[in-house]
Amino acid sequence: NAGVTQTPKFQVLKTGQSMTLQCAQDMNHEYMSWYRQDPGMGLRLIHYSVGAGITDQGEVPNGYNVSRSTTEDFPLRLLSAAPSQTSVYFCASGGTLGTGELFFGEGSRLTVL
Amino acid sequence: DQQVKQNSPSLSVQEGRISILNCDYTNSMFDYFLWYKKYPAEGPTFLISISSIKDKNEDGRFTVFLNKSAKHLSLHIVPSQPGDSAVYFCAASVGTSGTYKYIFGTGTRLKVLA
Image (tube, rainbow over all chains, first blue to last red; front, side):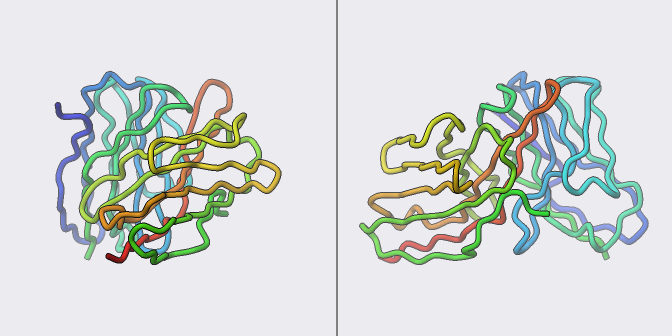
């Protein structure tokens, strides 16, 4: 009963390093998305996907890349980490486009020094 | 440009009383609204939703009201319980050309006092 799985849960990076946050779901959901949570800012949408091969930008896409080669996986890539990307990142998936609930992972806490 | 706003960062309520959490939005194209609850160190979990064509939806202690003319929705929790203490996010979905996205608000921290 895995649901949405995010790895790693914690990561510390130095400025300029790259890394990938992994997200996998086992519910056969077409919709997947990434959010970041910052104090006072709520959950802000980074990128989202409505199916394999289809991705689009959310509210705060700069500095992040995504791809969706399979229904199950939606990795988020930081190409050159910056201190402003220190945040808690959440992956979410949903089965019914636009009208269904989103299921969230437990989050990945990233610190960029 | 925050399309979904929760203007009250925090709210304290006595156990057994009603909690009312508010949310305002600016995009009239939103067609579905949802409320989520989040505990520390966990991902948000779904509470209740409402279609834009309705004005009320109820599920147990939770009721969501939608006022489209005012672009306002609210979540009522009656009676409030200490376990309801969490951060609550409202969210809205909007779709164009076969794709949808969900926009979240800034959250309201609810504290239910025993």
